[in-house]
Image: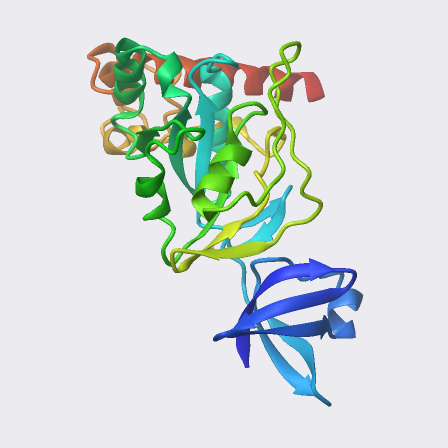
Length: 289
């Protein structure tokens, strides 16, 4: 029998198979191989005296550690346009992390009533060549939620973004119920809070949604400077036009990506962030030596 793990607590894994959920334990071979089943894993299991036993974990397409979920293929990257103010560099780093994890990002700009049309248009322009979809929402009032809910079908989705951006409120709206306990944003630190203790997949609109707001902090130690360019999809159409094979799109002569940024064919702010972060990664590497 096959199914997907939707919850794991205390060594028990709850596997959704068709229209029922089977409580399972994992075979000892996984422990000996230091493999831990994760929520989101697609598994094969057998029934032994009426109890489920996981016998195979299928290859994962992605893996998150906080929250611990496998096979997520879509992330709603939630940032407030104000309160707290949108941090452009942090937004780009969340997008890089999604690209690295092989998860399709969907940009959700929350609290749009606090931003101007000029600010909205600037963000649209910034990401217009990336292929990322960008939505302007007001999670508290339910504005723009139906469009996002329609994107859940046949996907495992997670929310991510900084504290205070409205992830828990958006989660509640997507689920159509007050699923999570939310807290007001602190005036002092501009952060929200939630009380979820473990990850669980919840069925919504024929898809599965991770019931925790996802990662709000970033661990970027996995990024190597030579691979950074791969996480900027707007570069793809220009790379083969660069003068030198293996161009890093930094300061090389005849760089088509640099020229495209100069001609406003790709967003200059995104390109400048790329160069800045490339320098940071280069410096970090030098410091290790």
